[in-house]
Image (cartoon, rainbow, N blue to C red; front, side, top):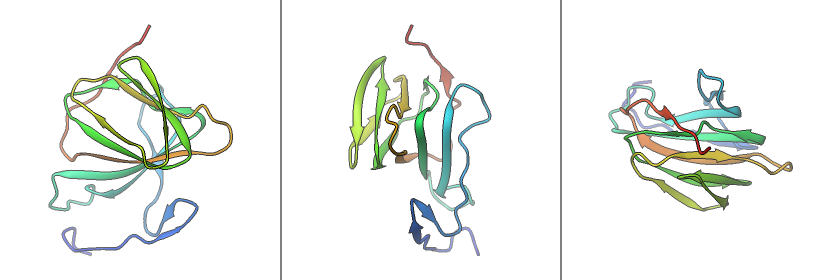
Length: 135
């Protein structure tokens, strides 16, 4: 299929989509129990953005980082929390988070009962994240 052809990615149940394979979140060791699925933007589509779905297992967390690019997060599954500029805020279904440039952030799932899943919309071409500390 041509990268610029329209396509449908049917939801097949339990937060899986036909033709979309979960991959590792990153090639680093400063996160735990996070998977990523890219829906749009990694197959040479003519877009300036990527749409991705991340899932954080109970007890898991993304890296604590900051970067020049902004992005948007929309919660689709479970409950979690965001550490935004070293302050923790709860998040749940349909909550929307805008992360401004250079704001430190981390998404975590402290809840033992189900995964915390969210869409992340971000620039297709972006700078590399920088690790930060809240200590």
